[in-house]
Length: 215
Image 1 (cartoon, helix red, strand yellow):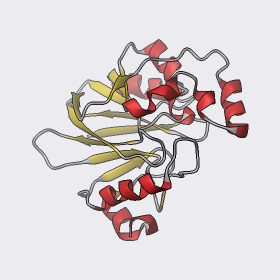
Image 2: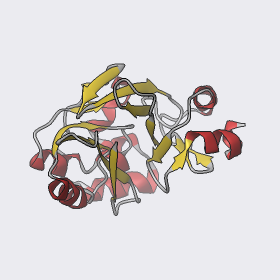
Image 3: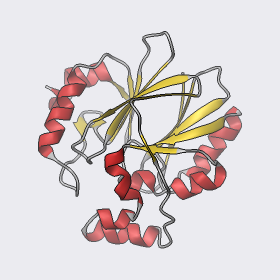
Image 4: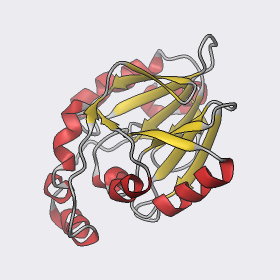
């Protein structure tokens, strides 16, 4: 499996290009503001053709790059239904200084349309399984990518799980109680590489063993 990473300059969001090693198609995961140029360079260098954008959740830092993505690639966007409202006006879903920053960053927001995530999609030679794990947002989703007929799993955790930490629950739409239940699901998952929304990659087994929030 091939996973390429671009770190968007706005709040350091990891933007991923994912495909089966032999496929000429790819899937884009998360769309950080300012990340499209790097993603485009990776796609072109690898000779890949994007077929979809998958969003781990609807917070502004993970979706503000969507207009630039969609200018380059006419592909469907998938996001858990519970977070769809966040695409209408990202600034309005936040409060305080962050809302003002978002409003200044995208003064002419075009409100992209997203499809609801199914339980599974087969794209770019991979099977993608989606598990909605609320807590950070209502629709925060763990994306598991696997090669058909193998046990290999690669996870994209968005802001649910980080190396040694987990996502915050104090932003609008967050829930500490829901996060407790979501983290319980992570404790039972098989091992695999984990690519988070921010920061370095890790493995699920390592986090299950050493992340204090998964104890």
